Length: 468
Image 1 (spheres, rainbow, N blue to C red):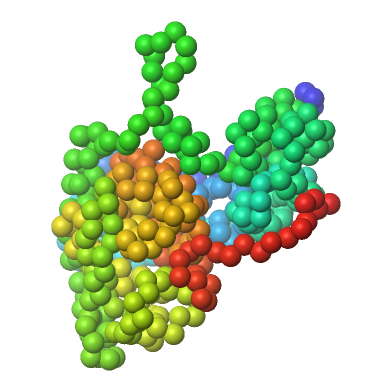
Image 2 (cartoon, rainbow, N blue to C red; image 1 turned 135 degrees about the horizontal axis):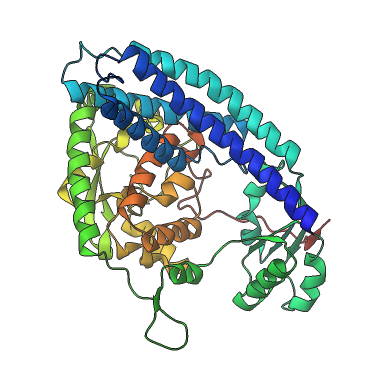
């Protein structure tokens, strides 16, 4: 056992050193670029403190961006995703530092952008080599984990389908559906596997499985239910001699609410100024295509179920819902115009929502606002769905960053509640940064299946109870 622990520690240390090497190299190249090409602005010999401050800012910014984009998440990311995350990190970090240089001296002509462009190009090459090298090294050091899935019905099994995309990490050897509520029987099945995935089981059975996994050093991944997520945000009350948790409706602290609203106003105003040329071009394109209205107004729900009119650039035909049925856009929806396809792919149709944020109907980060008709349908099957209305609706959120347009309502609900339970300025800023990453990922805008009205998917039934 000691030898196994030593091997794991050694492998982990090698990967950690690889991450540290990359970070030091990237930061060092920036420091060298500033020292060689911006020495007239930040001279090391005469003003070393300013030079170190600039390098320190770049270091902190780089760490924050890497964390937001999971750029060092070697364990479950592909080489391509690592490269994409790291490339995005360096583009934003270097562009931000150029802006810092300009604001520091208020003179565009004094600050040349060429050295930073050259730095970015060199970092691209290093990122490419490092991403695929560290990914290959990780899988050489770590064997594929022998994996068991224990779940309830077919819908629960479907929620774990993404495991199969990680075949270099997990090898699914067996699937047990609708297991007997007997932990002693399951204990025999669990021992011998490296990893267990659990979804859709009763609380008592699931807790028993977790205990067995901990006892036998088996990695255990659990898909939480709504109750679990609510308890994650519960407060520990220390006035009692026994452990007591308090769970109640989420209320924003004054300080956080003030900062959140201040950021909403500031960023939305800045966003409106920066994106105004794109908004003008988009408005002209929509108008010239079919002479219809430029903006599309639709009633949505925000905090406490209050209704408001969300603003979007119109991407569908003017008679898109002439039948009176409220439905989500499908993957190949013929209601979407050619101009609409382009602006939806580039997310330009969402820009008018900056006015909704400025007005106070929405926030930058929060659960996406649903239409009252669709929300009513969701509530019939998900009685907990109104819980996402504890806070103001948002332009982006946890469900938008890590889910998809066609992610099922229950999964979106769980992600929305996870955000509500850990709301903070740091979480909001991280999600805003992470949103930039998904703007260029096509799968995040995938529509629902043809013929679907809501995001509820028809689950394919199967008689397979166990798979070996």
